[in-house]
Image 1 (cartoon, helix red, strand yellow):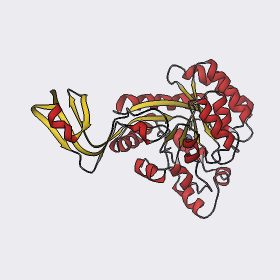
Image 2 (cartoon, rainbow, N blue to C red; image 1 turned 60 degrees about the horizontal axis):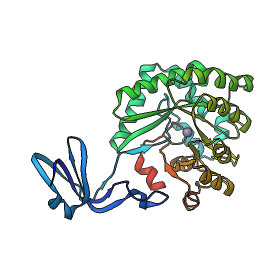
Image 3 (spheres, rainbow, N blue to C red; image 1 turned 120 degrees about the vertical axis):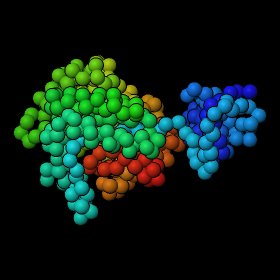
Image 4 (cartoon, helix red, strand yellow; image 1 turned 180 degrees about the horizontal axis):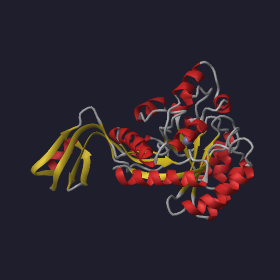
Amino acid sequence: MIAADLVVRNASELCTMNGPAGGGEAAAGIVRDGALAAREGTIVWAGETSDLAARVELLPGAEVIDASGQVVTPGLIDPHTHLVFAGDRAGEFAARCRGAGYLEIAHAGGGIRATVEATRAASEPELLRLASARAERLLRQGVTTCEVKTGYGLSVAAELRLLRVIGALAETTPLEIVPTLLALHAPPEAGAARDAFVARMAEELLPAARGRCRMLDAFLEEGAFTAAEVRRLFDAGRRAGFVLRLHADQLSAGGGAELAAEYGAASADHLEQLSAAGIAALARAGTAAVLAPVSTWVLRLPRYAPARALLDAGATVALATNMNPGSAPTENVALTLGAA
Ligand SMILES: [Zn+2]
């Protein structure tokens, strides 16, 4: 008999994650009417509830939890968030409902730039307080690992400041925080030389950030950054040993997925406008497709990312809240899963 001080039983579905690798539900290793037993914080047995009594012996004072009608799963991972920011952009939601588009709002001074202003005006303790509340809401929904991007700095110093806040968040929340340096998020103010901006990010920011985060990200999009600019950053990032990620093919088909695959990026994110060639490239390269259906919805984009086609092609598909003040102002994981 296996001795346990904690037992969870009668779960409608127990996700063991030990099923066969590859796309599809089988990988989750789901046990119907499942149970698990733990001792001193370590899982010592998992199986069907009907086998529990024959296999597991309860230690004196053991806790028994009835999970009838519920799913028991390892902690969820939110692989794409922008948790650290100040201000809100609810007014843009109203503008979109009146028919304004993403780029139109950005050109009118809204969008990412509005959040950059509010974030620059907030102190580090205030940014930490705001981000901690958002992290807490994710934690309550079962998220235990959360990726958090910079990107509302738009200068070397301001981006490093956001990395410090993310570092402070990692130290104060029970969540496992994975920081990402979103070095190219919005192009510089009108008149500022784009080349000089990209060069500063690639040559000054990357070395300064290297000790504080492993992931590097960029926004390849009409109105954001071009493929040539992303390549310049990625070349420098690869040399410095960063793991690459890319906001790709969200508003327009820009070959972002193909570029991410070519660089062996860990993920290409968004992908509403993903082409057939892009699907094949992601599947071939093993670059995960991170989809954020709530932002597709909030932005009223004409189509969702082709999740079914990605899965059928053998690509890895992950879901994210993409929590941010513009296109997904919510930490609601259930909403993300429902939309997916
Ligand atoms: Zn994003």
